[in-house]
Amino acid sequence: MSDPAPQVDLFELQTQLLQHRACLYDPETQLPTLPAVMDQVRKVLDERSTVQVLVIQIEQEQSLELVVGWERYDILLRSVAEYLIEALAATMGGHSVLCQNRVRGDRFLIFSSDRRQTARLLELCAEPIAVSAAETDDSWTFKLRVGRGDIRLRPTQRVERCIYAGVAEAEEDFNRRGEELDLARLRELHRTLRERQITTLFQPIFRLPQRKLVGFEALSRGPEGTYLEPAENLFGFAMRSGMLGELEQLCVERALASAHRLPFGSTLFINLSFRGLEYLESGQGGLAHIVRQAGWSPREFVLEITEHTYAEDPEGIAKRVWKLREQGFRVAIDDMGTGYSSLHTLAELRPDYIKLDHMLVRDLATEPIKRNLVSAITGFARTSQSLVIAEGVERQEEVSALQELGVYLIQGYFFGRPRKV
Amino acid sequence: MKHIFVVDDEPDVVGLLKTVLELEGFRVSTATEGRTALAQILADPPDLLVLDLMMPDMDGMELLKLLRLDVKGAKLPVLIVSAKSGQQNQIGSLQLGANAYICKPFSNRELVAQIRQLVGIPVGGGADE
Image 1 (cartoon, each protein chain N blue to C red):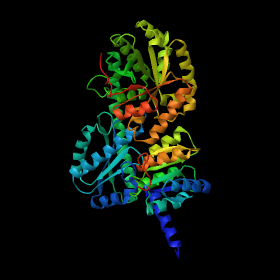
Image 2 (image 1 turned 135 degrees about the horizontal axis):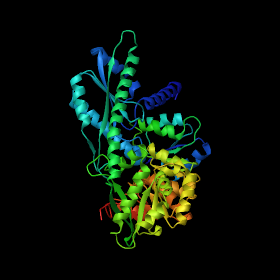
Image 3 (image 1 turned 30 degrees about the vertical axis):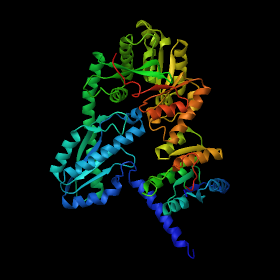
Image 4 (image 1 turned 180 degrees about the horizontal axis):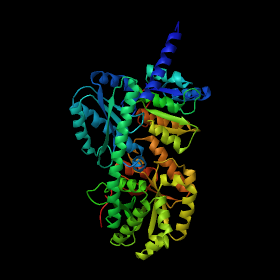
């Protein structure tokens, strides 16, 4: 190379280009963010002096990503982007622009100069969207919430700030609609609690290689056909409206009421958040009292505490858990591998069981990084004398990979779906 | 012959990995800085990238993020090699699209086995096949 200098500059430029792209485009959906489309929006404004803005987001509780995990949430965002691209193609009107509010954000913006197109888009956004079963472990339907605003050009105001004002108007509308909806849902949740409309499904847990039935996890669902039916919505919404304790107590009571129909000697795994646990323990006699009243002994129970609730207050949980354990309950850490709490902080808890999240199990056979995480967890389990349970097992390859890594307790569609008893 | 690109800010580590991997029959390119590595990888995409997380100018996480934005780097298998053993780093690199993670110190055998798996060489097969 006689003159390497220009090439170095080119490399530098390429790197800078990628860095700027990383600031302006969402890597998951490939959509531009608002700063990247300002000029396009301005061109739409050249055509018409008013332009409609739609702010679109998955209808959700703030905690949806916490409940379903980032991997699944990414899939949902990708399908929203695809849905909106198709919707725009199907409603060809004047000029329109689709973008995302920010990189890795979860709101989408559509600018359109055609009122009929906006009206048609609103209709399309009101329809439920289904994510195919091939992408997630089960098919999932969700709705979008939309807020509307107008961008009006004003002679004394800069175009960019007119655009920001229009977006802000749409976001206000978006939030107001959310509040109205929340009120309706809050009434629904109150009715569910009052009329005790919780259904409990039981999913079996097996020990390999003999496929011996070990126990059942109790899974709660809200009233059929309502927004609160899926567990994600039910618990997510209850968490946000401060009713999680009441809801979880009802779920425990309903599970206990149906569990006597399970095979004799089965261990019952019950999900509890830290907040739910605090609520139950603050009642007279606490959880142990509720369990005994229903004719059970704490020894027949495993309390599943989710990993992300553990991160909220490790000391508080550790204290609470030791107390419950003294009463005979056993303890499991749920959704291991989704959150960020380190194995060392969990060591204090010395759980009887560690449940691997289904996201770690998915494609375990072919993804070395997941195998790595699972073997770190099984290694930790050995030293703390905990047993590892894999959740969401659906395929033979996953069963084999899990056995290879020393995980013998299996739960998932491969062996049995959640069912009523 | 499969082409492996090694990025690590410590020249000793780079030299060692180069020797080990070349003995296994791989073609090996190396870099000790994130920025130059990125440019070289995109100019001549390898079959696998072995990436250190801690580097002074552009760390492994940033390099991985930028790499995934380019068509040529979107599907490239990436093996993270790091002295950080925390679960958070592993999940973080998983979120950015890394394919495997090995903690330092590692054994040569472990590294080679992992690399062979990622570039799709069956057990017992040669790297130059």
